[in-house]
Image (tube, rainbow, N blue to C red; front, side):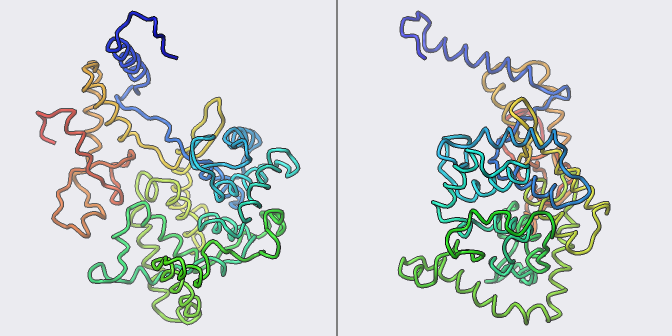
Length: 407
């Protein structure tokens, strides 16, 4: 609340806030000179992590982990029973996020007759039921055997065989996070793994509306899309229906095994210090895709990915949750830039600059060089992955940290 009787000028008040923020920044700096802050995410990533720990037999959640994750998820439920894309009431309601939170709480042992679970169920049903959830949620349901894989859109791995030039689909034209997340889905959509026994087949029956089960209606009918003039979605839906008809034949062609091998090679070639892609969705998908391809859970690559996933867990008095990733390079660059612009840096800034320079990527060409081979090296990753060839991104603002230095 603003104190209108204060004799302190607005400028002085603003400076007081800046100095307090700087003091907090100095107090939270790591001994090596960098910063690492929580990357707040929706409850979906925690829910998906709970599914992963449920379906993989080698490392089930402990009761302590379950209690802390339950605390986190339940604390972010809105008053109308839903979960949104932003904490509490800040973001708009989101059906898929709510369905994933409900699923996760049931996997954690929360009974459906609890008041907050009933509120969530009512929101889901009023929003159209499980048949309206998006692709990521559909994948979770298919993995658990709650819907057949045939209800999901077709994403044939043959897309990996298209050339990177010309008027074709090009996997490298996608953003790195979309590309690295999509390729494991190509593999999963072929193998269609189901982890039988993880949950009973009627585990979420209360979330279906009428005679929907088990049909997904996330995409409107072709007729509806045409009348609405949504021609891009119409073309995509039409292509999906055509691919459903072609899929049995595609599975028998030698190009299928070639495409799957290229998908696996793509993943393995990009496993580095941050796992595969260095964020939740890519690592999650890679673990499931590689095990679907026959790699055991104790395989060095799979084991490495699982360990890197756990790095993104964040715990405090609010509970335990999964971050989508973490970004010490990003956090450090922005924090240092802010301190320098305010003139409130200390001698410890020398450690920060050294830490950042050590993580500049000078000897690896990233995927960005495939479409632009003349692009100079010298970028940074968002995460702390000095050998990553997947997510090199040039963060030019860091040059402001030491303008006289040759980066």
